[in-house]
Length: 231
Image 1 (cartoon, one colour):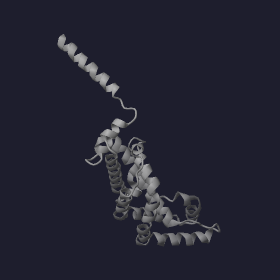
Image 2 (cartoon, one colour):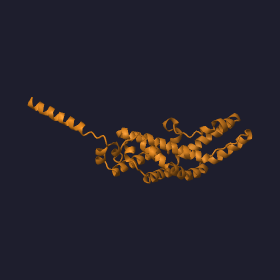
Image 3 (cartoon, rainbow, N blue to C red):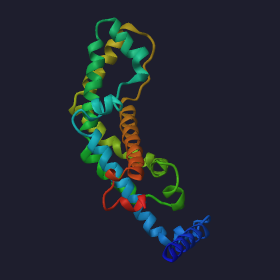
Image 4 (cartoon, rainbow, N blue to C red):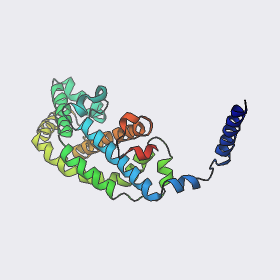
């Protein structure tokens, strides 16, 4: 009985200590993890998320079919103008060809996209570490998008422009616009390369944000470098 009382007393003391040491200010956390450690955790999360996004999307059938075609570049903005006009005059197959070739183009860019993402991650300026570490499940990717989008979009232009010729995207686009002008007097104001770059980049960033959430909550998505963020 005496031993039990001692154990109960020790347990009570532990509970009191636990609650009395509750840190409302974040000072204790700051002592456990320095800003330098948080910086490492944030950047490793982004690097791992970027690897995951590229591995999912920049592979055969990645943009076109991955996750039930959630990232397929479909040219929704052209459906009611260019695509419908061509369909009504027997050229709907050109729209399908454009979609397929564009997605194949996007899937081939991994070798150029990943180094660009890593460069943007390395150069990211972080001012409020706690807001990113303890923020929303995608706080880090949101911040990265806010600060890095312009650089990434500009950097993606070259590989996309090159592949628009390699994959015959420009060829089919030129035929589509020529056919369109035969049947419609409505001008077609559309920047093809800009649209492809934005769709690719948006898909990569969305996939990165999903992976960040998994790194935070699912131990199977962590490695030696990213488990610090979870801690």
